[in-house]
Amino acid sequence: MKNIKNTLPFLVVIFFVAGCATSSRTKTSSSHPEESLGWHLGSQAYTFKNFTFTEALDKIDSCGLRYVEAYSGQEIGGGIDEKMGPRMSERSKQYVRALLKKKNITLEAYGVVYAKNDAEWEEIFAFAKSMGVKTITCEPTPQSLDQVSRLCDKYDIRAAIHNHPDPSRYWNPETVLQSIKGRSTRMGAAADIGHWVRSGLDPIECLKKLEGRIYHLHFKDLNERNNKKAHDVHWGTGVNNIPGVLAELKRQGFKGMISAEYEYNWDNSVPDVTQSVINFREMVRSLR
Image 1 (tube, rainbow, N blue to C red):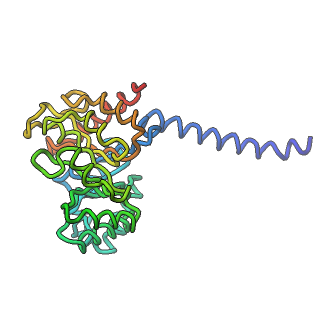
Image 2: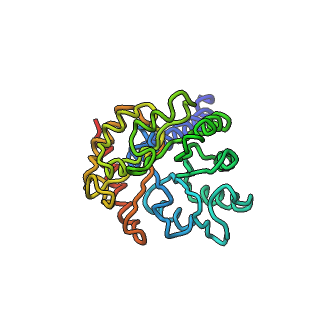
Image 3: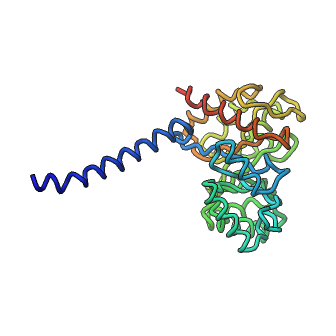
């Protein structure tokens, strides 16, 4: 009896901790169902390009998102008179790290970046490593591909080649595949499904062509196909076949960041992004 009495408080603590952990997992699974698939739903800070990075994080947080893809040149804000990018001072880096921690937001990706020479690529990768970035979204010149490949392995960071619409260099998946062939396996695609649709391509067929090498996505739904001026609409209400895209990503076993990039209604897009996130999570729950 004495042993049971001594053990009872210990058992109560164990059951309490286990119950809290189960409750936490259930809550996350319920409110962020994409996490169970290994999908990190977040936002490209460019969605809020009319604001500082500090303000953008507030908006991303209010949309119910926990990941951010930063871009070069955005004013940091918060009393810091610098811009996001490789030239940031250590003081600015410390401020951004502390802000991310306070907001419980992870800086998952950085881009879309370009560089003029090998030295600039080195700066970009070193900066990304210092900030804990896992994926650099980029559009390298053909002459830079070997250097990017080497830096991926040196810094253990993925380089995801991004597609802008036709006639940009990487507008179709075949060019991306040709560019990464024979290079580091850390090189892959940053699939912008909206730009594919603007170029008259089927996003699901494009995803299939890139299977196994999709490391990042820029997520959009548009009001028109094959129109460079098509604009963003709430996910699931446009022409991009978002349910089909999600089903294909699940089939492939994609794991990585999905960046909301809402390039419309620039000054007041929080309600649009929030509704898109709600729609996204409802569609994820419906996946079989």
